Each structure stands twice: as C-alpha cells, then as structure tokens.
Image 1 (cartoon, rainbow, N blue to C red):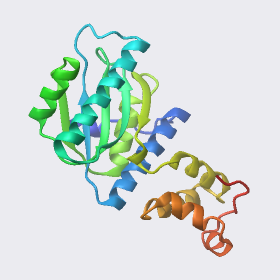
Image 2 (cartoon, helix red, strand yellow):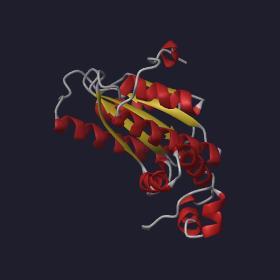
Image 3 (cartoon, rainbow, N blue to C red):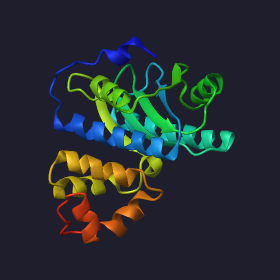
Image 4 (tube, rainbow, N blue to C red):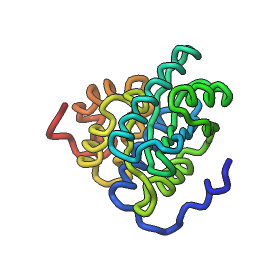
Length: 216
C-alpha cells in the first residue's frame, strides 16, 4: 500500500463536490461488503502525446470500455466500477472495481494494445472510509486534477444516488439518514427493498424517519 494512502490532508473542510464523491465511493464499498466482493483499484495511464482535450477524454473513456469487455470475456467475471478521470500526465483513470483478480502482466499487455500505454497499476485495498477519503483527498480536491467521475450500474445499485437524496431529505438528521441508507445497502435487492418498505408507516417510524411525500 502506498505511503500516500495515509497522508491526505487532515481537518480541511470538503467542498460539495468532494462530499458527493465520497458518498458515492463509500456507498459502493459498503455494497461490495454486503455482497462479499473484493475491492481493487486500477490505475491506467495514457501515452505521451495523448490529447488533453474533451475529445481525448472521450477517447480514453471509450478505450476503457474496450478493456472492460476484454476483462469480462477473458476472465468470465463481472466488472462493476467507479471511475475517476484526472488530467495527470496525458490523462489517467483511477478505477475502483468489484471483480476477480486480474494478473498485472495481462492487464499491462491489454492496455498497451488498446491505448498504447504500458504504465498500469493494480492492487487490492481494504478499509471503506480510509480508501474513500484517500481517493477524494488525492483526486477530487480543488487543487488537484480531478476532471470527471462515472460508474457502472452495478457499482452500488441502479438509482442509488436518487435514493440517497430522498433518504437524506426526509430523515430527522444525518445520523438517521446514514443509518437507514446502510440498511438499504445490506439488502439482497436494495432498490426493491426501498420501494417496498418506504411506504410502510411502522417501518418508517421505527427508524424515526419522516415519511416521503414523493416517490419514483
């Protein structure tokens, strides 16, 4: 584990973008724990000369999807991820994913074949909040090179951001919002559980949650 993993700034207020990213990373990590899936992080670089433009960013995203499909075909596994793109070097992707172990040598050859870049890193990491804080502090802080984040539907569950906003808006306080959302994340089908239970007054009152006035 890199030493920088424990050197993120302390006692520095986060802006709204950092808080949103932290919540989305942490939600996926908690969901992975409920599914008993291992979390790993991949860093994919770009070759010298790769355009630092909007078109270059789109090309990098397209080539990542090519790599993702190769991984699924080669290793016969799902590959659910949250991806952070930064402007480091000629464009870098930091990908947190749930899936099987991928040999570094194979990943390096595949990415070089697709994108012409040989510098690739992959490692398994543990510790939900520690990992989420590290990623946010190092790649989403205002003075760093964060450009965009995206995720697959299976990173957490489909519609999880909207569910979180509704839970937070209608909870008595943040503690109860986090508590309730954690319960949802632990279910076999979080979205179905949310839709089924949120109308039940007894369940809502047991969590001291203010009932929703709007639904999907």
